[in-house]
Structure formats: structure tokens, C-alpha cells
Image (cartoon, rainbow, N blue to C red):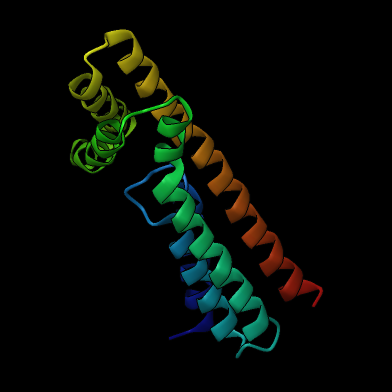
Amino acid sequence: MDSVWLWVLAIALIMLGVIGTFVPVLPGAALVFGGMLLAAWIDDFQRVGWVTLTILGVLTVLVLVIDGVAALLGAKRVGASRLATVGATIGTFAGMLFGIVGILIGPFIGAVVGELIARRQIERAARVGIGTWLGLAVGALVKLAVVLAMLAVFITAYFIG
């Protein structure tokens, strides 16, 4: 395959991955890493070597961890019950079935339902739902920052290193 097409694919993966930091259905950081790995391979790892790729891999794993705990930390921050955190997790996965709207409101609804079952206080349940949603929003911003750091590491290694 012509290297120009490989570069197009690498750049497309990176761009899709950046979009994926906001769209939970897409594995954003993994796509970014895949694009960067492909770009390094195209160049026979001359400019971007294994040390840089290891750093990028660690940052990719960090994004996956952030993705997994952001909503839970938001819920815990406002004193959510165990059922609320379980509900937020279930709501996250169930929400994926309903597209972007489901992804945005699924964790909120799951946390609220879990908190209502546990404590039967609507005001507290709403606060837990909002805390869960804020955790997701902060998590998305942190994931974007890490993905931008990945881009900075890659660009630095490729053009300067």
C-alpha cells in the first residue's frame, strides 16, 4: 500500500480518536494511539521510537482509567450510595444503546434510580444524578487534556526528537 494512503489512514484514526474523547461509543485514546503507532511504523520507527510509544501507551491506559471512574467519582463526591454508583454504571452501558442522548442521560438516570432505591429521597437522588453527570463532564475534559498531551508528545518526537 502506498505510504500516502497509510498516512491518510493514520491521520484519520487520530482525528476520529480526538472526536472519540467526547463520544463514549468510540474508543478515543485507543484510536489516537493506533494512528500514532501506524505513523511510527510508516517511518520505520525512525522518528518515533519505542520509548515514545511506551509513553503514549501509558497515556492511553490513563484515559481508559479516567473513562471508567469519572462518573463514579462524581457520584461519590456528593455522597452517593453503593446502589447509586451501580445505577450510574448500568445507566452508562444502557445509555449507549440510545446514542448520544442516552450516553448523556443514562448515567444520570441510573444514579438517580439507584439513590432512590437506597434512600428514597428525591432531592438527594437528584443531587447524586447531577454529581454523576458533572463527573462525566470533568472526565471528558481530563480525557481531552490527556489526548492533547499524547498529540504533543508524538509531534515533539516526530519533528524535534
